[in-house]
Length: 156
Image (cartoon, rainbow, N blue to C red; front, side, top):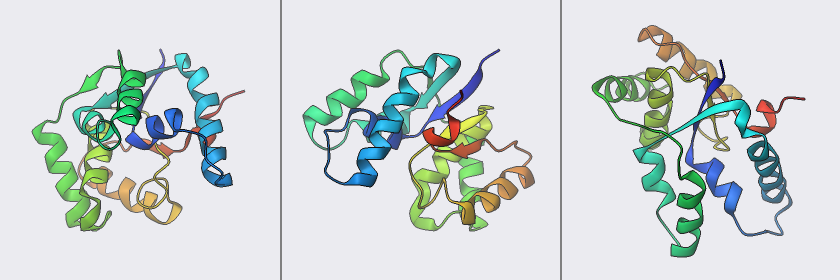
């Protein structure tokens, strides 16, 4: 049985982004493309919020992002997702300005994802915050997903 991965919007953004002279962003793009080339090892999922985010901004870039996500099953937002997202914000596991990030975490947890894959290192793939997110999920009776970057989810 394949492990389940919830793709947060930054993954597809880095996947299809135009080349950049920024060395860190360029490295993230390359790692994301390498991970994507081996994605068949996992069952991938997105949500309506991911599709909404991916569809914003420059029309050509948005079209590339949405095209890359074609065929990936879309999870629906349920009451359980809203409740857990609110808990993550109320307990300050995530700051109030990170409501969409709370929804991504809740989508992954409520739907039993093994991993939440992201390049959002400010609010999600952040060692100082991950433990708070995990604690809040467990206190709400949910198993938290492992929040990680593509670099952390590479297998040999």
